[in-house]
Image 1 (tube, rainbow, N blue to C red):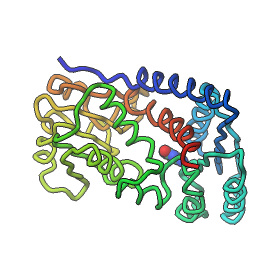
Image 2 (image 1 turned 120 degrees about the vertical axis):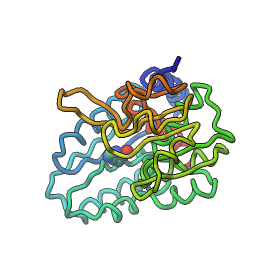
Image 3 (image 1 turned 60 degrees about the horizontal axis):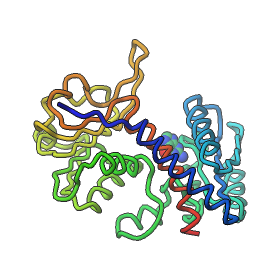
Image 4 (image 1 turned 90 degrees about the vertical axis):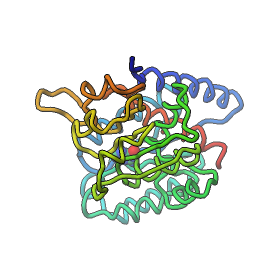
Amino acid sequence: MAEIIDGKAISTQIKDELKTKVSELKASGKSIGLAVILVGNDPASAVYVRNKKKACEYIGIESLSYELPEETTEDELLKLIDELNNKNNVNGILVQLPLPKHINEERVLDAISPLKDVDGFHPVNVGALSIGRKGFVSCTPAGVIELLKRSGIEIEGKECVVIGRSNIVGKPMAQLLLRENGTVTIAHSRTKNLKEVCRRADILVVAIGKPKFIDSEYIKEGAVVIDVGIHRQEDNKLCGDVDYDDVFPHVSYITPVPGGVGPMTIAMLMNNCVKSISLQ
Ligand code: GUN
């Protein structure tokens, strides 16, 4: 019988642990501040930012909110980041993506001090991950590792297949599984024989961005399936990249959508904020 990995419960557990840590830090005179920058009016981004601020409040992290108009210039944004890089009460800086089209995302992310880059997107942190140095790790893949570990799933020596090669999920996911001594394959849109590649996986992490793409034909009997996708269906219900009902009878563990990987991203962002104190 498959076990459902409860990301909501695990993320709450992590946030409660962090809350305790933050109050201990406060008792020793250290507080944590996260600057959250939102440019423009993207409704999905506004929801994400609101949830991040709510999590800060729950844990006891001070959130400093910068909600800037759509017309903000790249120079204005870079100037704000420079100021925040130099502010002692700001330990983490988060620029919500996507940015408006007239702003160069790469230039903006590169401007954030690697020591305050709680998203783990700065090239210095990306490089640090690949050579096993200390640094911030992208939150969603870090959350997946935490889900596996806290569910008692061993990674060492396992065949791990990651579908998707984005800078935010697929690539850091593969690096993290490798760091845990998994045998890692990255599959992507140009992969030939995707079904056969996936059927090798003891642990299959799916981040393709296509609703219900992965059905039981892609699954080895007894595999662990982690679904990073999230989509709104025509009936208004949410679904992932995995056809959950079709796959369920064949897996040992699976993450649901919603309530699987999703809640872990914010929990790991909070974890990075707490970590920022020891890195700085
Ligand atoms: N937009 C979608 N996901 C993310 C994320 O993890 N961090 C930031 N900053 N923006 C996002």
